[in-house]
Image 1 (cartoon, one colour):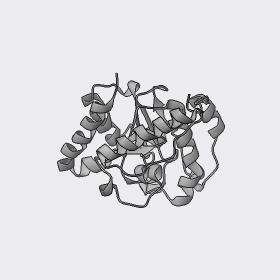
Image 2: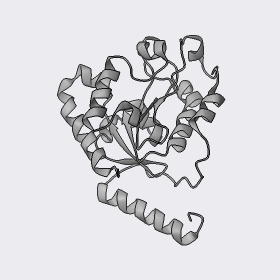
Image 3: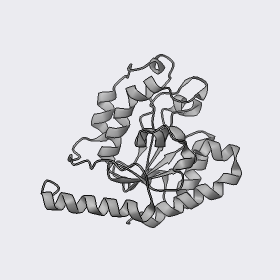
Amino acid sequence: MLDDPESLIETLKKQLQWHKERGTYGIREPDLKKHSESLQMIREDLGDCQRCKLSSMRTHIVFGDGAPDADIMFVGEAPGEAEDQQGLPFVGRSGQLLTKMIAAMGYNREDVYIANVLKCRPPKNRDPESDEIVACRSFLFRQITAIDPQVIITLGRPAIQLLLDTKEPLSKFRGMFQFFQNIPVMPTYHPAYLLRSPSKKKDAWEDLQKVMATIKK
C-alpha cells in the first residue's frame, strides 16, 4: 500500500534510481490518489466548454480518442483544421504520419490514446497561448490520471513544456525520458515538424524505439 511509509520510501527510491540511470529531468511528486474518474466523466465535465476565447472560434471540441486503458498515450499541442472539422485528434496530414509511427511500433491507433494540450483549434494553427493552456490543462491532467498509461509520448514543444512546467526548449529533453506523476514521458518531434523536416524522422524513430523497450505487454 502506498500509504504505508516503508512502501512509499521504496517507491521513491525506485523512481530516483530510474532517473539516476537515465540522467532525466523534471522529477514530480508521486500521485498517490486512486484513479476513480473515467474519461466519460471528464468529458461530461468539460461539456460545451466556454472557458477560453477559443470556444467562439471552434467547430468541434477535440477531447481525445483511443483506448481508455492504453499503455501508450500521445499528447500533441492543439487541433488543426481537419481535427476541428471532425472532432478527432490527428486526422490530417500530421495524423496520417502519426498513424504510421504508431503502426511501426506494433500498435493500431485504437490501442493507444491521443490527446492535445488544447481541446479547441487556435486560429491559423498558431501556438497555444498561456491563458488557453491554463483554462484547458486540468482536463489533460485528468485524462492522464484516468488512463494511467505506462508511457506518455509528447509531440512537440508545448506538450513537454506543460507536463514539466518549464519554458526550456524541446531540444533540452528530446529523446530522454522525463517523468510526470510517476509516468515516464518521452519527448519527441511533432509529426507536422517531421513533414517539414524529413531528415528528423530517424531521430523520432529512435525515440519511439526507446519507448518500445520500456513497455510491458
